[in-house]
Length: 401
Image (cartoon, rainbow, N blue to C red; front, top):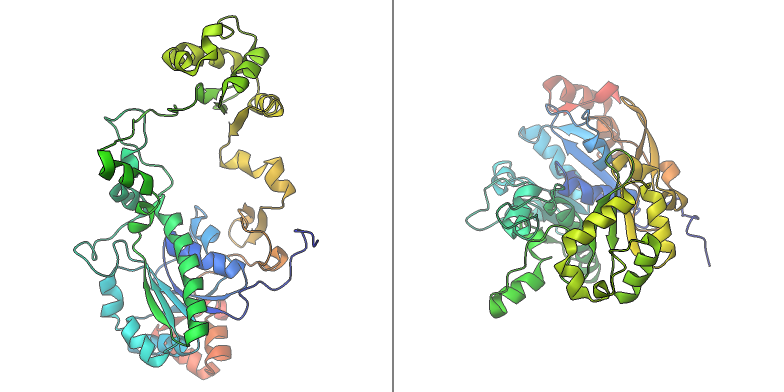
């Protein structure tokens, strides 16, 4: 058996060329995954809009991509894009539908140039429909799906997930459906247009709630961290600043083991061996558990409970996650040298194997860093051609690269 630490130098998508017109999170996440797995990603950026940001978000989502600064709203820039379309496999964009129409680079136009092209459009509400021209972000997508109405501490105040759930779900959906389209193209020889509505992706993850409501009008109770089936079940504050641990007692055996560890006379009551009684006195039980964990470190409690077969986990923030021993043992993270920020650590790939060796991963390019490479090596432009395009502002050449 080959060790999972032995990764081929080339990724499994080497040889695939993708034109990336995406912004913010959902689209850039999809193309970043493709780049990690070896695809040639050519990110097309407006020369007037900076890409590298102080918060590092764009750096997290745009590694392993070449960048050309190109004015698509100019005839010369559009022609360059059409030339790239002719030699590419996939185009991904997440503008509002009217943007691609106004630029006259819709799928119908591009397919005439390259019948094999696969174009994935990811507007907020899809290419068609009454909401199609509305802008959307992950937070509005999850609101439309009804996710805030399913979480929170009481029904009077719906709460957003805090992570713009619609974005990563849509990005992962794009990865899968584009691979499906590529397989279809390998069989039939034809490309296709893919329409992914950002707002629809989280809706498709809530099927059981739709089914339950349409069947008998069922509406889930809003109960914070509590569970209908387990008790106690929640997050408890431990020793240290803002340190917490999640604990879930999933059955009577777990409860008996738990009480033997806590050794609290109130919790050891025989009445609490029954779930219904624990649910009835959940506030009291939670207060006793809170007292027990308040003087202990979260990691110590977690390992003690886990070693005794009880479901428990430290509630980590982003910084603590970077030092997680399990993720580091699996070599999950990657260190990249950022020109503006120095050495920074990022999340790697959750799918083991088949991605390009991380020693060859490249940090996010600024707008125009690969403009000359793309024009000269892929399209056959000359130095004089590049100088003319630079003078007219059609293409940005970062550091004359």
